[in-house]
Length: 75
Image (cartoon, rainbow, N blue to C red; front, side):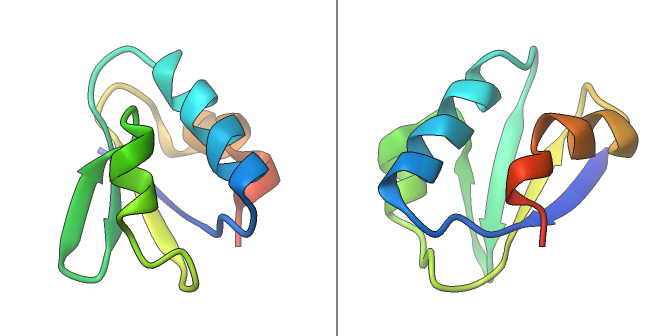
C-alpha cells in the first residue's frame, strides 16, 4: 500500500485533488492524525484539519505512481 504526504491549501486544490482521486481504481484514503476519510468524498476531505500535513494512501498504486498523480500537492 503506497503512501505520500500532501498539503491542501485552497478550496480549488481540494476540488482538484478529489477529481484526481476519483480516477484511481480502488480505495484511496486520506489520514489526518487519528482520522481517516475516503479521498473520493469531497465532504470527507473538508471534515479534516486542512491546516496540517495529510497522508494519502492507495492500495492499487505504487508509491511512484501515487506521487506522480498527486505531484502538485506533495509536501
